[in-house]
Length: 351
Image 1 (cartoon, rainbow, N blue to C red):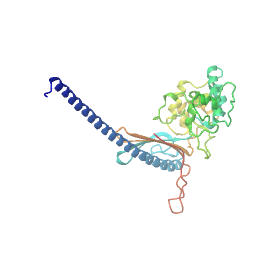
Image 2: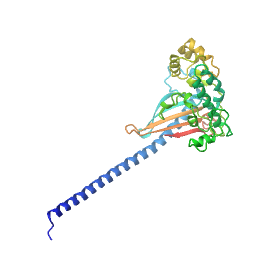
Image 3: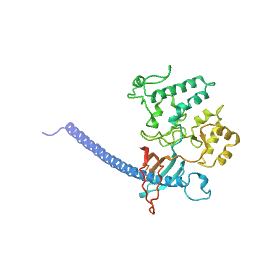
Image 4: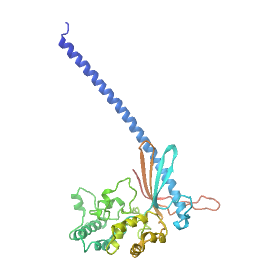
């Protein structure tokens, strides 16, 4: 039987359809294969960069330990010295690692930002700052402290007649297992306390890639470790601006706020230089704040913020670690190797 013209047309359409289908499938397989290869390479490179970040952090640990214990203040460093300084002042250090990997490291003293352990004692000053001017703000601050106190106390009773959050309130919000009813283990817990943006006004503007701004909360010591800097004074170089403002009668102006930021950007310099930078009037205001220190000496707990990347690839890895570096290398007799206790990590995070 000889196929009709219509049958030939249908057969041609079927053949073309099958060819098109196989062409699409082949293209999808090729694309999928390329995507898998690219994904595998990125995963491999990110794993390699993780080890590079750990290596850069370990190098920085030793540099910070040896440098800060030999040079506890900038007063002991010559201005014309070409030696790289490793103070916990947030300045950037560039590192060239193996296989073309480059790193950027910043070191911070842990005693920066709001001290979670001291918040309760700061309440009256913070509330008082807004008592006369803004009733709505005062209530918002009262609510923040009520929620905060309910979060850390050891019972399930509200301590404030109007504000606060206990276990039933968190359940209604879909947060099972809260509040902690004990000391905070992580700084990040503060960021879901209601009205926390009062203490951290720029919270919505912050990004993971940002270094550690002064207005954040400091990292608490992990359970079982005594926090040796919990009750130390706030440092001029890292005290939260909101805290400074709450301590000055009448607050501080926008121009004074910018001047403080400018003078703090110089890093740990002596008090005479800071006094000259701030000017007599502003320096007098700050000097009168109880609990604010101009001592440039670091604590012994440091946060090392390391970012490594492969140039030209856009692949990066970030490691943020906070640790107690109070145990520098020691000499044992004629040997340069001593008994060194392990470094205690307060946090160790990869991005």
